[in-house]
Length: 374
Image (cartoon, rainbow, N blue to C red; front, side, top):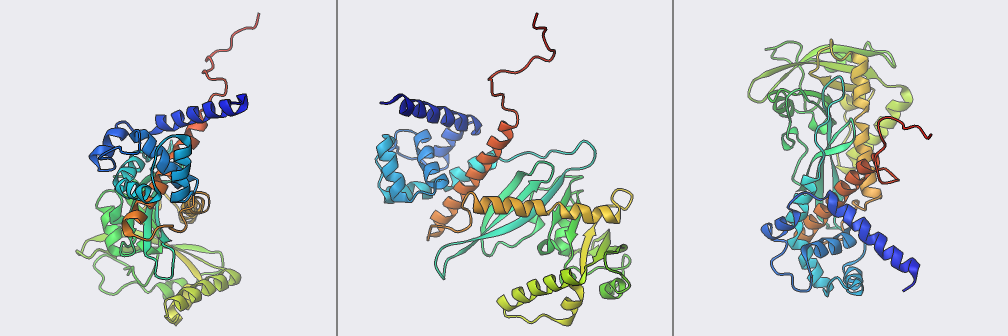
C-alpha cells in the first residue's frame, strides 16, 4: 500500500476517534436498551453500526451504495434491505444520542437567557408524500440547540412543546401568538417576545375589560419608521391576565408591498381571500412582550426581535448543507429514523464547531506566563 493511502487511513481512524469522543456516555449500551441492536449479525459492533448509518446520513449515499462501501471497507455484510431495517430500528437510539448532544442554556454576562423557537417542515418525495415538522429551540447567545422534536403534520407550533425555565426570554413568530402560549410561558416565570397576529391574539387596554383593544385605531397616527408602545393585556383561556406591551413600527411603502405580495401568495395557496383588515395591518410590524419598559425600551424590543432571524439561518444551513430539505424515505418509521439521524449529524457538527474554537494546532496548552528565550 502506498504511504499516502496508508496515511489517509490513519487520518480517518483518528478523525473517527474524535467523533466518538463527542458522543454521550453510555451510547453503546443505549443501542441495546432502545432496540437498535438485538443481534449483531452481519455487523461487528455497535460502533460499526453507527459508522455505517452515518455514512448513509452524512454522505447522502443510497442504501445500496452504503452497503457496498461497508463491504469494501470490511465493516459489514449487509444488503440494502437489511440496512433499511437497521435504520428503522435505530430511530429511538439516534434520537437519544442527538438529545444528549444538545447544548445547555448559556446566559450573557448581563441579562437573561434568550431563546428563539420555531418549526420547519420536511416532506417525503412524491405528490402524496407525508409532511413532517421539526420543532427547534436555540440559544441566541451561541446558536446552540437547546431542544428539538420531530412530529407529523398535526404537530402544531406551540410554546408548550419546549421546556422553559424561570427568567428566560422566549421569542417566537406569529405562529406562537396565542393566549394559551403566553399563559404557558408566564406561569413558568419566563418572559415572552413574539410577533403579534391580531387575528389569534386579542389584546385589551386594561385588566378585566370585555372589549379588546382596537389595534388598527391605535396604529393609524403612526408615521413611517416611527415606533410606539401601548400597554396591552392578554387573557388566558382559564381567565388569568398577563400584562405586557404592544410595540409597533410602520413599514415603508415598498416594504408594505412586499408583505402584501407574500400574504397574497399564502392566501392563494390556502384558497383564501385577503381581507381589508389584513391589508391594513400589513403596513405595520407588531410585537408583544411581557418585559417591562425599564428593562427593554421600545426600540430595543424591535432590535431584539430581529435576532430571531438567526434561527431561520440555522434552518437554512441544516436544510441546504446537511440535506434535511426533503426526505428520501417513504414509510413513517424510516422517515422518522432518517430525520433523527440528520438531527444527530447537526448536533455533531455543532459540537465539532465549538470544539474547534478551542483547538490547539500544536497539541498542547500554552503557559499562562511567557518564558524567556535566554
